[in-house]
Structures are given as structure tokens and as C-alpha cells.
Image 1: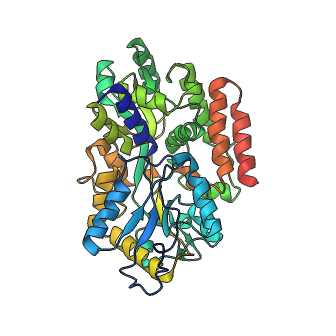
Image 2: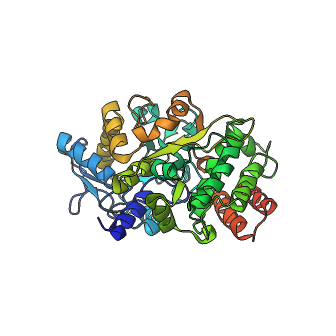
Image 3: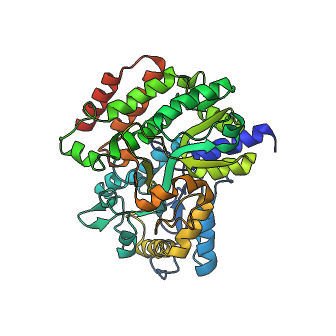
Length: 432
């Protein structure tokens, strides 16, 4: 495979998995049943339907693989057609408002993004789902999927998010993954001496800088205060007067210590694929499923690590149901019933395991260290013991809070923003 085609594949692989702030998804524009048939007389278990799903290109077809498996077992046809990543959020909201969206779609749990489940459900766009869908909601995440006891989306899988670590490149530099934050700063210096950088950051893309900050917040905020979001909603804490200050202080310190690649403030996903895939950087803050994709494309050994804790902190990481199936409330009843049958099937343990294996995730039906993908071995104990939190922004009240974080970290890298300005803007966005 040429270097150009390898980098293109890696770039899409990074984008095709859950990344906070932007979803790279696919779908079909014609809601309801097939053209020429309103589906009203169809057998509910036999009605075909369309799904908008996560797929950046032909290589990232795990939703289509799942749909094909279902069709082979049941004979029910499922239509899957991709949308460009930069148009997906707009397409979903526009088509739902116009009444011509797909029958089902992949959405973001909670309220923190434009296509979040709760926001769309409150607007009347989503069909309530059955008890099977409700039964596989991760404990503590119910508010991201339910309103007044009704469930409006079904999570697809659990997706660990961490520092994807290029073990092969680290061995070349004589570095083991740091166990503490102080060790990380030392590793940054050692990596520089070896002609590498410890972390490659897409500093010009707010949802990557925001993701990196969320990853740091796992130990700085949520390890000690798992209910921090709830406390912020109650007005008991603020971003400005909490561990979020330490998060941003760490970003500044890492930047000053050469932990990021040169020119990180203008970095893009091409820098991540070139740096992490090419071995010039040892880590990147990307969804864990990227480890398997990059390993397959480059032959390097990669795994998924938690961000190192600081003194007095314990290891903690991010894992959550970052994608969820939703059903279009305006589709025909027979089609909606058929879509629910598919979701019930996808919730069966063997099918949830199959989806996790082909998508590089963890089954939504439960974490079992014996069946985890090898790339998750370094955080397997954290996952099995529950030492993790979901992506924080999923529970934030609007997308402006996350935008303030992502653009704020950009400003820290360029020197155009201060920590106080960022924290104040996040609090203001929360309270708006």
C-alpha cells in the first residue's frame, strides 16, 4: 500500500469512530418505506427500512456489516447510504424538520451536540423504544436516553477513549508508557531527544482539542467527583473553581515542555495520522477503535491507555455509549415496528459482541476482560472495575459549552486565550 493511500485510510479510520463534537456518519435521505410503497400494509417484522449510520468510507462499513447480517438472518432489507462527515449534523436536523429523514439514524446521547438524543426527542422527532432498548442503557446514563421514563435511543456499544499509544515507536525511543503525570513530562523530553514527540494534537480542530481536554479531566475532575456534571447543573460547582482549572494548566505545561508536535496549534487529522501512524509521535487523543485500524494499516503495535494521573490521583479513563440508534417518529408504523425488531436483535449478547468486534468497540451488553480486544488490555482492569466515566460533554446542556472548551484550548496553544477566559466562557455557555 502506498504511503498516500495508507495515510488516507488512517485519516478516515480516525474520523470514522466516535469523536466528541463531530460525528462522521452515513445515511439515507428518503424516510419511511421504499419509494412507491408506504409500508402501511406490510408485516411489521418484514418491512424494510433505512438507517443513517456511522461510516466515513467503504473501509469503515461496520454498521453495514451488521445490517447485512440481520438481512441474511431475517430477510428484512435495510438501506444504508453514506453522507459526508461535514454535512451530517445539518442533514439530520434539516431532514427531520422536513419530514424526509431516514427511518432510523445514529445519534449522540444526551444534550451536548446538535444531533443529541434528548434535544431531538423533546422536539418530537424520535419514537419511544421498548423495554429491550431500555434494558441495555449503561447504569447512570439514563438521563442521556430517557425522558419521563420513556427511552428514545438505544446505545450501539461502549467506546473507550484514551491516548492511543504506538508501542513500536515508543520502544524505538526507549520509552515505556508513563504511569504518572510527572513521568509523562519526562517522557516528552526523552521523545524529543529521540526525534519524536510524545503526543500529536490536531490543535486546529476544536473537537480534537476538546477531546484531549476531556481525556485529562478523567483524573483531574471525575475520578474524585464522578457526579461533577450533576453538581454543576445544580449550581454547586463551576468550571472556574474546580479541577477543570488543573486540566487546562496541564495543557499549558505540556505545551511548554514540548509534549506536542511543532506547530500543534494548526494541527489537523493529517498530522495525527502521519504522526501516530508513521511513528513520529507516540500518542494521540483519539477513540480507542483507531488503535486496531492503525495497527492493521501500518503493522505497528498500538494499544489504548488512560491519561496518567497526577500526584494523589488514581487511574481513571473515559468510556461511554457515544453512539446510539434512534427511530424516526414520522416513519410509518410498520416500518417503526420493523426498526424496533432490528434494535432488539442488535441488543442480543451475541450480536452486540459481533458489532463490538467489527467496530473496534466494547459490547454494550457488558464488559468482559476475556473478550476485550487486545488493544484494550492496558485499561481492561479500569473497565472491568468501573473506573471510568462517559464523555463529559454528553451531559452538558448545550453544544456551546464544548465549543468554548475546544476553541479555548486552541487559544492556549497560540497564547491568545487565558485559562480564566476559557473557564469563564464555559460557565457562561452552561448558564445561557
